[in-house]
Length: 168
Image 1: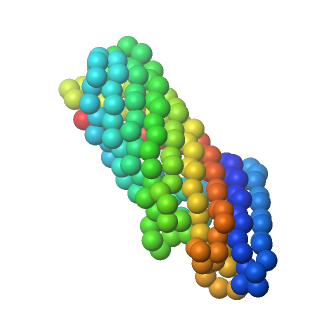
Image 2 (image 1 turned 90 degrees about the vertical axis):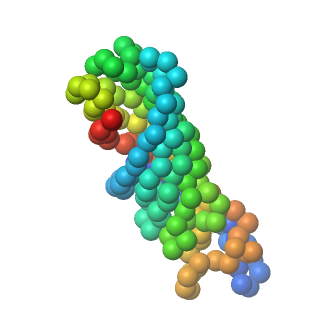
């Protein structure tokens, strides 16, 4: 992650409104392990369903479910550059800091598709990804603010992803 924006607003136990905002550039590393099931729509275009396990920021993990489109400049069965665009939702772990609503996910990227032979190929990818979520708000005393007191909690995380995938 290289950029984060966060805005929250809640009613305190004493009845007054608490509002907080923060945004800025910060470095944070997360992992993303995934699998993808694709269908070729043509020689150059495919659609895929992606799921796995990922982090979005500190103490927040989710199971993503995304739809991705890939365009291969010379066709899937050739060594070539490709572009990728995807969107979906992330179902947050109950024990994580994530909120009750699913997060909205997006990704735009590209890379190089290298055919190994037979049905095997490697994709070297770079992508810009975004996560839009409503995380739980930490309480100043202990735990988290009760959801019925929360008026707003919105966070945006942007990351640059580097990945290698084996296709078969």
